[in-house]
Length: 152
Image 1: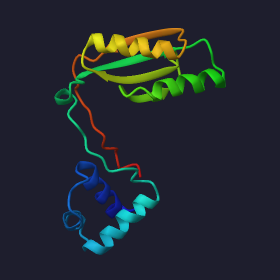
Image 2 (image 1 turned 180 degrees about the vertical axis):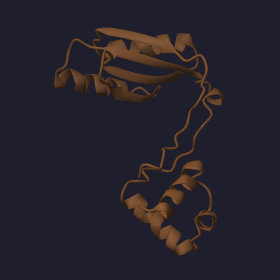
Image 3 (image 1 turned 120 degrees about the vertical axis):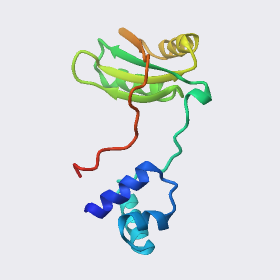
Image 4 (image 1 turned 135 degrees about the vertical axis):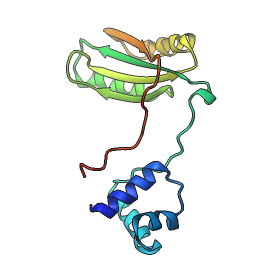
C-alpha cells in the first residue's frame, strides 16, 4: 500500500458515495487507474464494505448502552451459545471479547431505558450470565468509522 492508496482510502472513508472521477482528481490519478486501485483494495479486503451511516436519533435509537459481562464459564460451548445469542440481537452494534476484568463488552442502541430492559430480558432468556454491568452513555464526544491510515 502506498500514499496514493492511503489517499483513496481517506476519500472513501469520508464519503464512499463520492464519484470515481472526484476520487481520482483528489489523489492525482485518472479515473481508470484509480478504479483499478479501488478494485484491488476491495479484492484484498482492505475495503470490506461501502455503507450508509445513519442518524441513530432520527431512527429512535439514540440511547447507547455499554454492557460489560463477566462470566464464570470459559468453555467453548458456552461461548458459542453466548455469541449466537448476542449476535442475533439487532440492538447490538459491537461485541468484543476482552482481556482484563471484563470478559465481554457489548455496545447496544435502544430508544430508552424500558427498551434496554426488554433487550436485557431477551438476552438473559437466551443465555445464563454471571455478572452484567450496564453503563448508559451521557454524551457522544467522538464517533467515527474512519480508521487511522498512517500505520499502513
